[in-house]
Image (tube, rainbow, N blue to C red; front, side, top):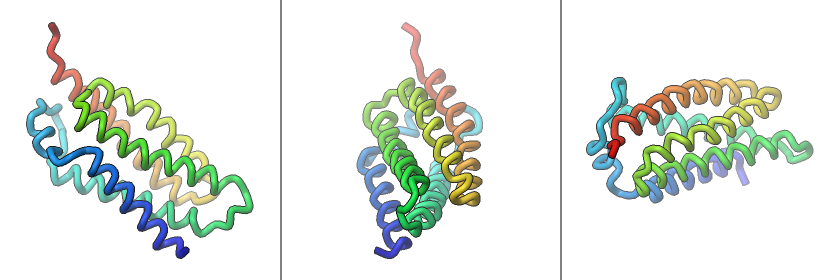
Length: 157
């Protein structure tokens, strides 16, 4: 199959899974929470999501164009699949389970997988490594945001 088409299908399927797992009340869920300073607007969250899937698409397309003669591209593909699935799973924790503490804690293993993906891409696809390193920088902000969101919305009994 054409690598471009396959990468597009994978990204669309991952985005659809994320949306299905988040449910229909995403905007409502965000509106009912006390937000930390410097929280993005809903439309900016959408832009962030589009940029995330654009990075995934570009890197997937590149990795899928390799012939599986060495383990490097396979490892990177598996790591990228884990990143896509973990991102979708976070939506369950945050939107369906409404567990702000767990959604914050999820950033830790997720960031480790993203770092492993960056490391695996360094020799295979340096531009992809840079793109995911930029995403890693965003994850620092996202973890900060998630922590403060959790703390702002925790009621001490």
